[in-house]
Image (cartoon, rainbow, N blue to C red; front, top):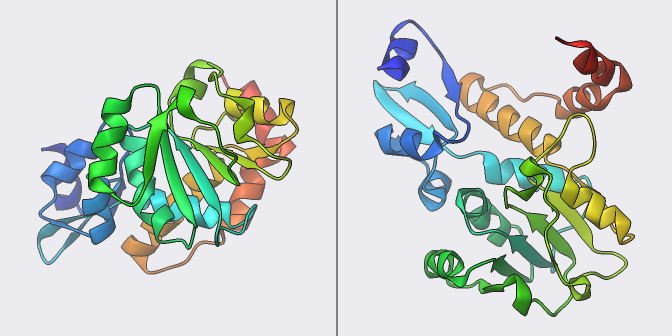
Length: 230
């Protein structure tokens, strides 16, 4: 009802966050192919009186990753097998990587994603043995400041670690883990900006200069403003 009222009053589009992405997906009358693959929607708009849905999380991730690493022919590890992982699988597989491994604490959920994306490999955290060029944390561990128990054999000096979560005050626990083991890493703030920019383009047909937005969000002045907020 609230979504219908929003558009009835002239609203242009909605950006959806957890835990409502699956509900938004179910509500939509027409969905993009990447939305169907993700089985979740983070972007809604009206077109020809139909509620349309897309998922811009994956493309947001790919655009942000391009700032730090060339994805062609890379071996990629995704940690976690929940909705966040599902949302990035399709775009990652389409990005030119060599292979993708999905690791989860339990194999059951990983197996479900493997059935949807049969070209990926899957295993438990304990079974991880080989090295990866890119490791993406799609678990919720960083939200509770938990450090995942991962074998160090998965790292080499040029491994890049990326956390889908972000923290405006300090590096996430996963990024701290990467730095502690002499690997580069960053959080998902850039992904947040890029997915929003993609949604904005869908609604307005205008491309946002995301570098300017991201630089502002990471600036010391903005951080000080956040710390001073009540």
